[in-house]
Length: 66
Image (cartoon, rainbow, N blue to C red):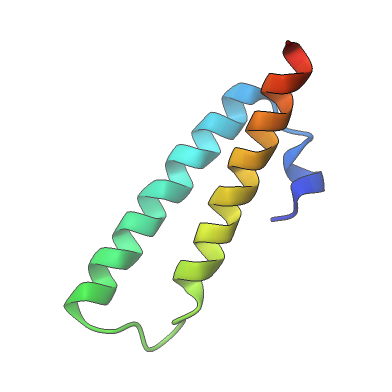
């Protein structure tokens, strides 16, 4: 998901998406600890990047308000 797409979301939607992505990341890390991910080993770094993008857009929106 690109930052441009995320900028169209509201603050509430971004917080919900952030919660969802963090939950997905926790599940992937748990599965990876049990047995290494053979299907998509790049899924964890991709999710981490998406979370970082969401946090970046949230911070941009916070600074716009003040």
